[in-house]
Amino acid sequence: MRIGAIILRVHPGTADAVASKLGTISNMEIAHRTDDGFALVIEAESPAAQEEQHQKIAAWPEVREASVVFQSSEV
Image (tube, rainbow, N blue to C red; front, side):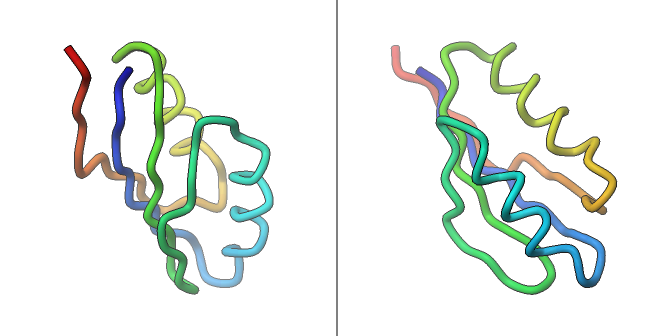
């Protein structure tokens, strides 16, 4: 199992729309929210699955920046 933290910066006025989209993703939790963005915790089975989820979120038009700030895995 991989656990990672992602910081999202969103375009002004889009936080509610992004929160709605994030609510549809399993294995993901909003750890903190502001008007400017989110801190997310994502669990995945593999590095590839975690990266795929990160890239999917980063491609949303409301997202200005999506930065991975932490990654770990159980051995």
